[in-house]
Image (tube, rainbow, N blue to C red; front, side, top):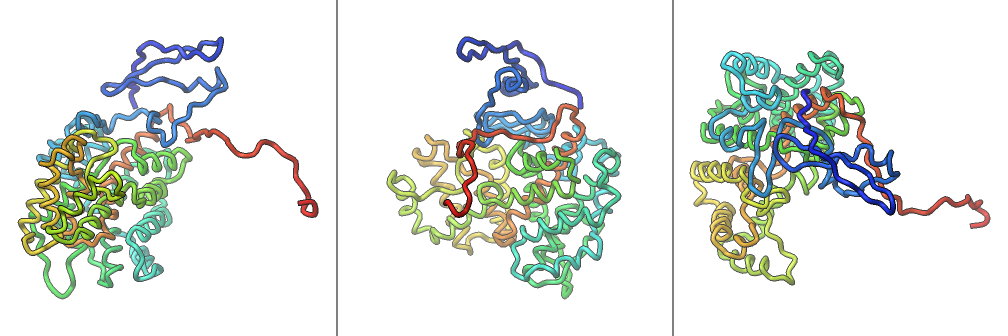
Length: 434
């Protein structure tokens, strides 16, 4: 990877009567950073940053976020342009290779992904070891981790060809694995992939087709699924991506690393946000109950929160939400949202939040989780599948980040430090004297 970090002078850190020069560096865009790699060796001090929210853990050329301005770029391209004009497979190529593909490159890439969508038949029997009511994410963690037991020919992390094959396999097989997890939990037979369909259409067919009748993919749903995947493909160094990088820094194989990312994504504070937004809508119940709910949200003495609004990173409108909003309305129109009280609540809550000064002043705009939860429900997915769909989309981001890390000569095995607040050294007391 070409090093794009630029030196920008230095800052001085004064500790008592000693001063230390700390290099200041910058990337192509975004805030500059203090290079503290030598700080401990020079001063004997660590920095303290719970959650690493003020720490750059790596150099990356994949994704850039400006939360204050509401900007998200994949390899420099605005997310709204990619979502509206590109396909998810084209975005996968972009994230993996750093540039948009030519027609020939895209055709070759699509061919490779399509021909890797089937999973080993023995792997399909692996599902039978799970309880019938297992959460799809529990199944996903186990099955993806097991891929390394089936594909030994792509686990040499030091071989560029192995890394490429593993990348293609993961992008291709995650929809199949997720669809099989869905089918298993609802007691229906697995549906094998069909090479004549595009990525999103193939996934929808594997989820909703049954052997008893033909299945015709709805183009509105296929487009919504494809754009959903694009919007969730990568999001810089979030918790799950950092987990993949941390696992990869130890030399773990790519299948194990992606399984670790799926496990992290399962957390309700990460991938489960759209489930929380939908649960909120279910608790509201009907449009008539919205005024009372809004009153509780505004009450400083109430612990009621507005889920699916605002964002930890974006202090402006989430750029992905703008695209997801259009898709959401298209899907609701296609399924006839007028007949679903839950979707009626969502539409009215959105209207209030976008027009009420209380929410506008606090920048509590609907985020992507609000719209994606509604959209996925309208498409026929249960809430238990929401995070699994997120994992399918994010796989390409994880594998692109993992590959970048493997090619980065500056990368070291992850080893965060701590402030120890436990007991100081003390002598052992024998059992009879305690």
